[in-house]
Length: 207
Image (cartoon, rainbow, N blue to C red; front, side):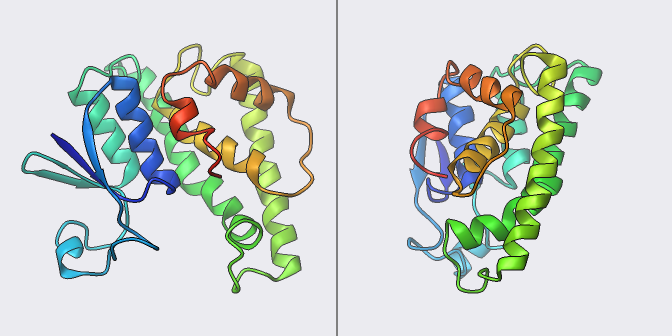
């Protein structure tokens, strides 16, 4: 059986859990990370030398990096509707997944750690303000994209990109500051509510 290593509160672990729910793929999950089993042990570092979650073990196959994991699961376990084989469709999905894991994630990091995680090293007001400004800029990009597709982020169909970005939208809505009105993003979040796994792994009270 597929084994997922990583605590369920991690946004990147929840990507993997949500994909498993979509694919109705059975799995076992072990809590690793802050507050649980340490990822800085020889046992874990032998699986992922970066010491980060998630990691999967699928038989003898070990894989880390959340986007790589969900691409693998969709490709191997009948998830072509989430990650089609057509090169153009796949490239559009990859583009938005990579944008989420780099540009969007970097924009909210300081504000989220300061306002939600209450990290002592992320309490500089000017830095929080700048992070929120940058985060808002990226959410404006997303809002414009959803206005254009009037559906999901990479087009008319739900895909892996929506799992990655849906979790980031939930984080945006859950972080306590005054949010500008992005109507397309709000409609998008409501649209995602109809997807399998959304309530359990995205809008589940965890930011």
